[in-house]
Length: 350
Image 1 (cartoon, rainbow, N blue to C red):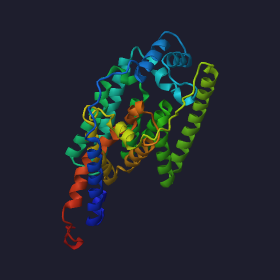
Image 2 (tube, rainbow, N blue to C red):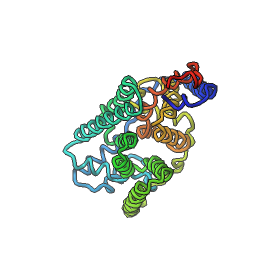
Image 3 (cartoon, one colour):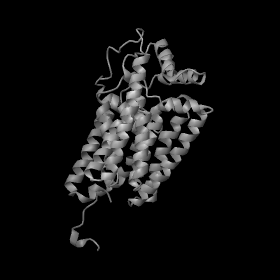
Image 4 (cartoon, rainbow, N blue to C red):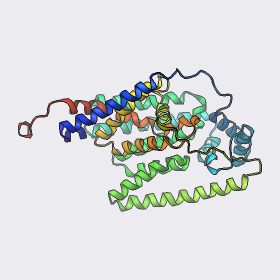
């Protein structure tokens, strides 16, 4: 049973109708988009971080390696936000090869799938729903992992950790949820919206232990980012340039949709397919009684990416796009409960 079952049928139908109209408008708007170009830029962000990792394996320090590669390829480096925090690449440099990181992230994905299946079954979801969601999640992550350069992009592991945190909360394992959320933040600062959402949930639920844990984690991260900022400032030279356009680009619905499209299950399809499925996934997440944390997370990132992000940053979608696979199967029971005739309470079986 979804949240729509608790609404008046007229209200539930209005919700479904609004989602259908939104999907139709998005499909019509993006259906005429030309197919994705086969042109591959000569040097991408993943190439940059593979080069940085190679220098680190050769004995160079993280910050000197970042500066050397980014300056050599015309990146703007004067802002601290153009320098990734070092946790992920330093972790990769300690492994025998990046293949190990792919195997480890694959193993983490298996854990996420097991937790997701258990969460859906525990919230009265049928076997078909649970299997559909886990298959969608596995495709959204593992298909992207087949590309060798993707593993150096911290968004992949950050998104997997955010998903692990959400399904851990759904299974009542708050300690894992907090730990995974903080690990995601230390790897990529773009996990901050999710961490703040979890902090707000803890305050709403008046869970003093969890509030204290999040405060301690945020203070530790503040110290970590202060160290990162100091190291960047010491590394800057007159050769470092500022980005004249910045990160506020107002890419609107198109850029937000392109980030949703960065999903192993959707990336090979035309953009209009993502446009059709995104409203359904959102309805499913909000209708699912255990999906509110995921629904708010997806909505927050979608709204943020209508304003923030350069056209080449569509891979930021890896932060939240696997969550869409949790919601998409739930759109079917939500639709069913919205359109079936409601029996009066007096006629329902006890």
